[in-house]
Figure 1 (tube, rainbow, N blue to C red):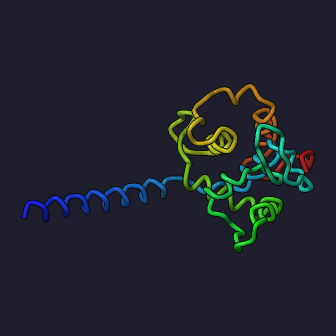
Figure 2 (figure 1 turned 30 degrees about the vertical axis):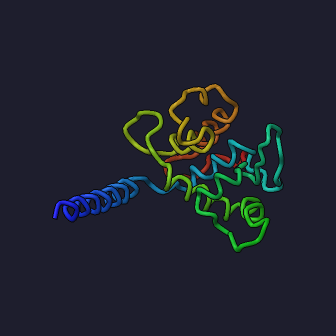
Figure 3 (figure 1 turned 180 degrees about the vertical axis):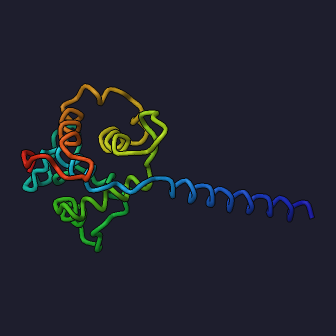
Length: 167
């Protein structure tokens, strides 16, 4: 009887953990298009012609969002049809790459800047620094952050850019 109770406790705790995780994920907002456009601008000036490249150090990034294979994989592997270059094809396509970014944020979205909310500023930190490093303020002194803030500030309250200087 004791082993049955222990088993039931383990099952209960596992179900509870899944429910809590699912409920927490419901609190992570979807990355809106304004945020997506500025993430794109921050990384590559949203250069749609930017292909996969190796900047050194064993890193390999693709597309206008400058995303690695691991990021794409953790973001749900959109565009994965079993081919050896599916991740490159996806990440070089802005729409597919956006699916990877949104998937990644659904998994790792959290309040990185300690503002009490999960918003685009957190998504930018996660995108650039990863979920484990997103609380670092080191990003605030980078060109990436300056590009993001310049873009994000150029939108009005209706998510319409004040000018077309970015695209």
